[in-house]
Amino acid sequence: MRPAEGSAEPLGVGEVHSARGDVAAGPSSNAEVARHFQMLADYLSLEGASVYRTLAYQRAADTFRDHSTSVARLATEGRLRDLPAVGDAIEAKVLELVDTGTMRALEELRARFPETLLELMRLPGVGPKTARRLYETIGVTDLGTLRLAIDTGDLLKVPGMGEKSRGRLRQAVEALPTRPERSLLGVVEPQAVALLHALRALPGVTAADVAGSLRRRRSTSRDVDLVAASTDPEQTLEGFAVMPEVAGVAERGGTKLVVGLHSGLNLDLRVVAPASYGDLLQHSTGSAAHNVALRALAQKRGFKISEYTVEETTTGRAHRFAEEDGVYSLLGLAWIPPELREDRGEIQAAAGGSLPRLLELDDLRGDLHVHSDWSDGRAGMREMAIAARDLGLEYICFSDHSQSLGMGVGLTPDQVRSQIAAIRELDATLDGITLLTGTEVDILADGRIDLPDDLLVELDFVTASIHSGFSQSSEQIMRRLNAALENPHVDAIGHPTGRLLTRRAPYEVDIEALVRGAARTRTILEINAAYHRLDLSAPHARMAKDAGALLTVSSDAHDPLGFTLLRYGVGEARRGWLEASDVLNTRPLAEVRAWLETSRSSGS
DNA sequence: GCCGTTTTCGGCCCGACTGTTTTCAGTCG
Image 1: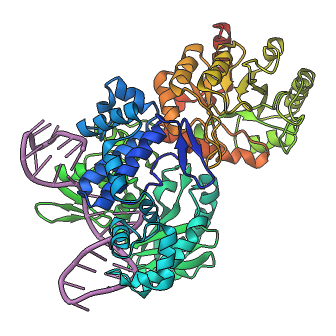
Image 2 (image 1 turned 90 degrees about the vertical axis):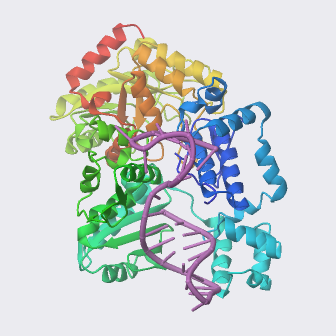
Image 3 (image 1 turned 90 degrees about the horizontal axis):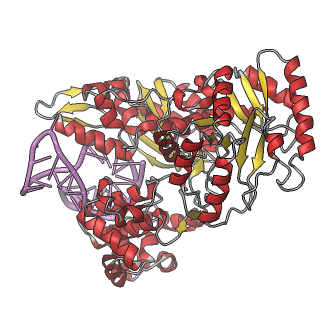
């Protein structure tokens, strides 16, 4: 067990990220409840409690952190037991936490071990056993006293600590302040793809893929996982270790290599014989929660799954799969798309034949949120339109900012009228793509919409977004969002929570109220595909779908390359279980227009 | 501590790698 950096989405409602990526939040926010249970789990591992008891608290912390509605509210309504991993003991502790602000069990452990010991467990190679031995044999309580013990050599008095451990720990302590937090999908993926091509070119390699969180299209990753099939795994690992992108080798075995890249990312490579490649790919794709659930199911059906085989428990007969779907089909399951592998009902759906047919990039026919140099874009409308057409899009909507956006970037009503004329003129000269008139209009801090209704009504598609007043209370934010939902000329809410991954927390959106309101007023919710936003997030997109709201996947492109961001938005949508029918811009333009017409005439 | 197509007790995913070990514990994903 390690102190969590969490399997969770890095930013949820109500969370605040410091520069280090740690989470702080209001007293009863899910982030704060999760933090308490995480600390309890860490303390229990330090105490030497049963790993299963410790894991139970760990799972509860993960569940709470990932849950999209208020855990505190569920607890007070008596519905907390509906969540997985919550039983009597954990329910009682959540209620205690909500009532008193703390938990007795946690306070007792705090009295026994300094809280700073937990931060030692964040060092690579330091788990609960080592942390406790450091504390009890030489009195190390935090990073400062650990550094001292390394320097003076006191460290060597600790059983199990030799010179190599001393060197590793020294390095780890020094690297901790600069250790990279989770990196953005759009930053990690290009590096991973480049290395994947290099890996495939190595002698003996018959197949290779990206695995891990990147294959599941998570918005952020802690490292890169690659897998390969090779007729000579040792030689493949050797060849990879000397690639120019590799800065240093951290681990090296017969099937596994862990390296640091010059970019600062870490990379894990696993290599097996081609006959077991499907087993390895399944194993390495994860998530951990998915694999745990899958293996539990396998046990019930008389199998034992590893990265090499699926073994029949009674006979010992081993099944090896060169293709990943073999693992699933042996268990009676349909192949599960990687984006769904989070133990959120996908195994049950695969068993029952009810997996969704997930949205594909090719399903997108248009892009309803595009900028140009009329506001803060970096290319003219013609250049943007041609780039979109070249990618196969049938229609795009120019959604430049309205006047109130800072620094004179946004358009006045008169400028919007001029742009409408310019779009129509350009549209008449271009074949193969239709250009729609639109705006990304500000929802002002007082709830007013930044352009007059008589102008909005002239536009094909109106997206309304919050770009100011981020620190307002939930009531104020919701008053603004509700004003936009109720405005009959507003078609969509842009980047609805305002989060900037690893940089800025979402504003205080009541997401349940938002998705209900969106469904009721037929207002579309955007999945903004920019990889630092991915907003709505996948869990919220799934809530929106379940509430009956319609979504878009939009690039928010500010230059011609920006349209390639759509694939990140599609990944987030797939993680949210969305199908093509849930996304407006999969539809032909005539159907889009008809849908909007009906919505606007229905009055909200 | 949780959980149930082995159902209220007895399990809980499974293996790789490192370092300090004389046969394995601890960490990690």
